[in-house]
Image 1: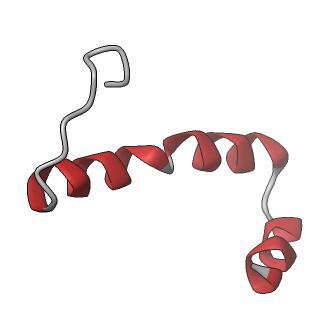
Image 2 (image 1 turned 90 degrees about the horizontal axis):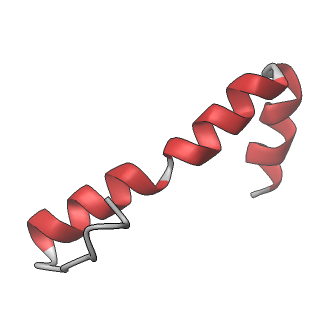
Length: 44
């Protein structure tokens, strides 16, 4: 966490926000594919 916070200093703020907002997408995809999780349609 320390290194990720330090590396964010070198990235523009709009890029940080976009990256943080896209973070749940691969987590949800892997959860559906490998862990057989189900999410409500609104989450997608």
